[in-house]
Length: 243
Ligand code: FE
Ligand code: ZN
Picture (cartoon, rainbow, N blue to C red):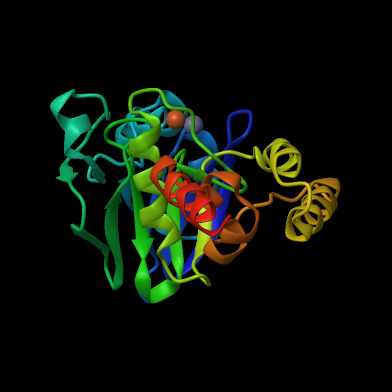
């Protein structure tokens, strides 16, 4: 399996997931069709599926044009978005722990509501990769459009529990501004300052900062590192006991 990053729109990333044994590919979050069709041609692969992390137009805006060119594509999304008919061309509705396959490449579905109620990640356990859409970004997380903070906290916890070497392929190039916020919230964390230098170097070379890793997010992402209100309460009570 290999992943080809496909920049779309202003700062979105779609990803071509290629099964190298069969030459077939799935596209994660095609915000628009032209760059995806270019990448498919350039890589010499056959597009077989669209994997949608959520219904927002900057992630599914290319579905209709891709289906017009390739009508047999499987289109995968969460059942909540099927119920609301908001992922164009959806053919396969999934839920937490379901499995989808691109030939020999297996993806497990992780339901992570918060940014939207039907937000999902595609986790490829055999390939140490997860596609997180707008739920988990490098050093940040998505805005709460449909869910609440408690939901997002649980969702980020599910992703943080993946093996630390798991590569995180996220939906937007927000890394530098996210890291500035992270440095503001936790100025004493050296890993954040190292990540700022690394991101600046990559952007300076015109490269994307994707993918991150779960391990890097555990070290730098204030939303992954945040303790829940309950945990904070427990710590405070524990401190009182020892005072
Ligand atoms: Fe979104
Ligand atoms: Zn987005």
